[in-house]
Image (cartoon, rainbow, N blue to C red; front, side, top):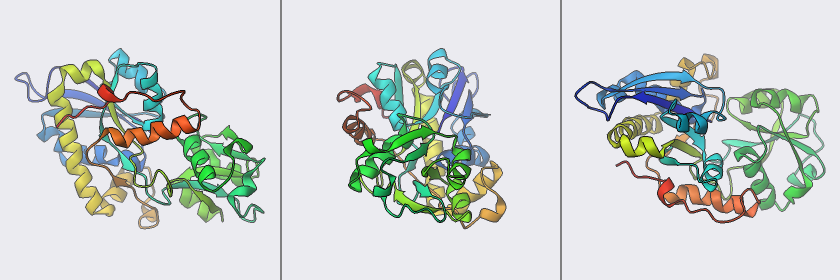
Length: 302
């Protein structure tokens, strides 16, 4: 889940014109406010000239930030914490979607004899990547259900291939998020675990990050970006049809799916505790070795 900004020039509102930024965006609901804010002219009103660049995943986010090719990127907090533990000079400044019950889960096939989480013991579960947010949320949900995550084998399957992998019996279950949840349900799949119903409920899933260098040199630009984003977030939280219309425009969902998919709620304002909960759970599941100091890694852009 990644959006990235590549910029040239100084702070927003500089005398030589607006700050130019290229925004790399994955077409998922979590970061739809970026597209909406661009369409409504909210970035322009903040002195920002935004261009969207399509990204397929988050692997290029941190290298892009450090090389200067990207100015801002969206990532999940698991990947962010992992980068911070390596002393990577990046900063987080705004949240994305908030974890709500049913937003992501582990689904099993129609007719599966697995009727409860314990049935996954000794079985293979598909996640998008190992040691990332999909595996961590699944492990925590299993633990909360009284199941030893160590008894479950995880394998990587691209998100758009998990539904067929479950249908064809290649895996016992798979981690899904919309619009793939709706695809799974259409095939008769059912939810076995709600990965956001427990410890992660109402917690920020990920957000917007930048390099320490860009943060130090472009505070006004980041403040303007956050302001435009916040305006979009407030409007979309009040009217979910705006999220659906934006996703249809992004070709992330079909017009006939409107009203049938679970739309996210977006956070507005980032605090260290939003990220610390992820770091704490990462320690519990040995994703990281010890507590990480998030101090300067999370900044307030106003």
